[in-house]
Image (cartoon, rainbow, N blue to C red; front, side):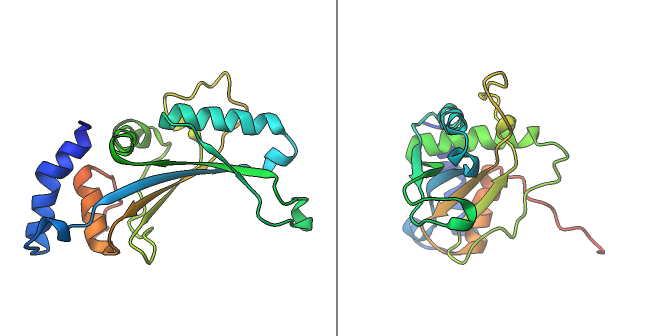
Length: 184
């Protein structure tokens, strides 16, 4: 069993039930999936960059990514319908918690000039969105095979749209949010 999954079941659920005065375990929101996206606008000009990005994403997540194609043609961007312009991976269950553990304990501390994650990056559905500017924070990425730094978007999808509860869950799992500064 993944370390964070065990922590969620044994410590986080009782804490959330106590803090929000829930009577049933099923009332507690849970992390359903993590979706990792990489936008590849340069893939239309350089097909090799698509292969490299797909390979890096599969190494980071441990799962084969899906190539995303353009739904519409946009002449200003020289984009045609059906061109590959991105890749994504959806992680669930054990793989999701293993990735979250590696993200919190290994990758996020390697971010340059890290001040903490934005605690206001929740959407209206209670999901948290995290933008990463370069994939080199993950130690699995081989710098020799990479052609350039690529950003990615990581979305944490929860079962319920309770933003405060979902933020509390991520805090209990070890997500390093920015602290509110006193007197500012």
